[in-house]
Length: 295
Image 1: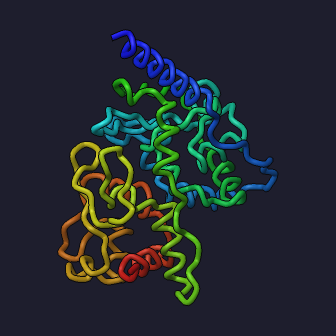
Image 2 (image 1 turned 45 degrees about the vertical axis):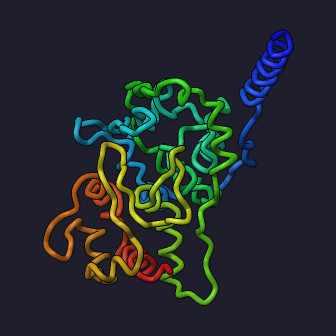
């Protein structure tokens, strides 16, 4: 019995050391100073493509743009997209562009804590310094809204952010957005948007029990979206079998109207309303080109 108690004590101490180590283990790295001049119009366009407005604006509740989004109900708890206006107390008004870059590309807060992966930062990791500068310039034009962000409703142990360091080490990967040799400019632009800024795989890919995307099933569809919704497969063969073409898919991404005359509902309707509906015809056609020929 004494030997078992000693073993249990050793294991308890070892476990405590591991937990403390994880709590103090730093993640991410400080970006180099970003001194580039941002273009407001390019930044606003990228913000639309990236879903910033759609996610961080609670349209149903009449919320101000970027003042905080509608709750995301997941198996891990309820998450609230925060206030991203220029308010210095409740938004990002006292941030630096480097703080912004670290948050967007690495998913790390100003205090060095990892963000929950409901924030789609893994898709933004390849944004260039110029794109960050453009986004930052656009965000500086957003009027301040002095409304505090709602606290996430997440139970123990999910609410222990140090545990996300393990999640990141196991599941975090960079987006596959680099051009592929031998493919057309339109296909590569579509790949950049679909796998990067537009983060289509965030909804249209199934997830494992830890909430990470099943990379072997990219775009295979997801039956467990936040709030109980579903997202269909975006596999090329499936899309073509349903009658999708480059022309009608691009049209649907701009208007929300499908080939049968029905309209996108739920979260996809919000994506069009707050995001893809603002993209150029060339970019929408590029996204459709990639999705119909991604394999």
